[in-house]
Structures are given as C-alpha cells and as structure tokens.
Image (cartoon, rainbow, N blue to C red):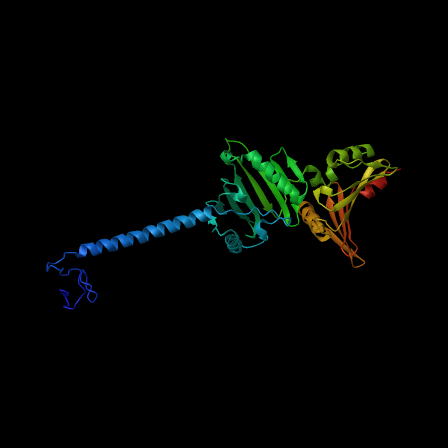
Length: 370
C-alpha cells in the first residue's frame, strides 16, 4: 500500500505513513480512512489536561506534606529551640528555621514570622504554630513561641498537653523557678528561660492551647527572686522558720545548731548528680546569710561551667550586670546588689568550686547589734 501524500510504500494494514505522518491513508480495500485532525487536537488537549492535573496533584501533595511535617519538640538543656541561637537577624533566623523544619516561615499581619504544622511532636491531630519574636530596638531574635492547640478527639485536651510538657520540661531543666495557678511556669536554662503558659477558656480569643516560650530573658520570676531572697525566706527569720520553709519547699529536714541551720540535698532542684549543702547563718537569732555549696558527681546532668552560666544569666536578667573580681587566677566572684542585700556567686572550675551566697546587709546588722 502506498501513502496518499508522499507515494512511498507502507506495510499493509498500517493506517499512517511513517515518513510524512499523514493522518489519512488508503485502506486495503482502496477506500480512504477519515481520521481527521480533530482527533490529533483532542489528543493534545487530553495530554495537556493530564499534565496540568499532575502538577496540581504534585503541588497539593507538597503543601500537604509540609503542613503535616512532624516537627520535633527538641527540649534540650541548652534552652534553645532547634539549637537556633539568640541574636540572629530576621533573615538568618528564617533561613535556619526553613533548613531545620523544611517549612518556609510566613509573615503575619502583626509582623511576626510563623510556621505551621500538624502532628506536632508525634501527637496525631495536634496542630502547632511556631512564631519568632525580635527585639524592637536591635531587630535581633530573642524569643520563640511554640503554640500547641488541643485536640480533644485524639485525647490531647489542654490539661493533658499542660501535664505532658510540665513533666518533660521538669525532667530536663529541673523544678520550675515559679508557678502561678497551674497556668504559668518558668524554668532556668543555660541560655535564658523556658516558659509554659496555658489558655483554658473557650471564651478567650486564643482558644484552648498551651504555649512554650524559649527566650533569652525571664518573665515569671517570683516575688522572692525579684527581692534577692532564697526560696522567699525573709531575712531575720528564726531557725525554726528557716527549717519550716526548707521542709515545705524542698522536702528535707534541717539540722539546727547554735548559730546555723543546715541541710544536704541530693540531686538538687531535680538536677541529677548535683548535690547541694544549704547553710543558714545566724547572728543574734536572726538569719543574715544563706550559703549553697554545690558538688558534682561523674553523672551530673549539668557541668560546673554550665550551672555557673545558668545562675549568671538568671541573676543578670533580674539585677543587671554584676561586679566581678578574680582571686589567685582561678577563683572568680560575681556580686549582684538586690533590693534586700546581695547575691554572690563564687566559681572556680579548676578546683570544682561553685558556691552561691545570699547575703543580708552585714554593715547594717553590725551597727544595730549591741
């Protein structure tokens, strides 16, 4: 059989010429087959439709995958979210967030940058919004807010979420510095503070959720801490009051002697491997100093250097930069003035010394003493 256009021989039974690809050929019985160009246009339209459909499905799946990305809670003793350091610029922060979560941050109407996800921390059906906050003056990163929304259908109501993360944060950072009505908590870290806040009111605009804030500064410090008091024990307290407060707050019995009261606490503040001896010193039956000497074993969760950093960041935030003195090249003393006296941190890594002293005004006491 010959092609009706170019005249070349084509195999019997073929409806198309392999040389000129004409769409109309002579059949074996000599009649023309009418396979018009409409058929070709329809093929091209179907192909184009399939390509567009494939692109739509691909884009949808990519968006769905990014939205359902299982972001790790990453609760680490360094007190940083995803190890992103404080002080980064906006661009640097957004770049690191995208690298670590595989989700591009989106700018909100109030200027914050947020990423959103589902199944946060391997919790099915639990949505999360993670926002970065920057200092108004320097425009540098100072806080991450992780907003975790309840999902009662999968068993993660707001109280369950609160209890879960209070436990997890306490396991890493020790006992919280402060707690208010079961809705606000704050822990110390070696890079600042970690806070947890609970919203449990259907009428509130925020709905039912908890938020974990990783920050370079403190917010929920207790009144005692703000005054420079150890566990809110007032100066001039008697030994009986000191013993009662220690028993109430730390759960340990105090040994009372003539001019001091002391107690040894294992795994102090929930820090595994860090033991502390607390001594209250008295003058004329009035408490004038509390000394906390720290000892570390080989399994200590925090090193001596890390614990020094934790205390220093905390008191810097409360009371400003301390006075600093160095003795014998190894012993460094930081002193903060407080509303009720002073706090002194003695640190010597070489000789493994870390002592935290809370002091009343000695000069004033001595002047008033007969």
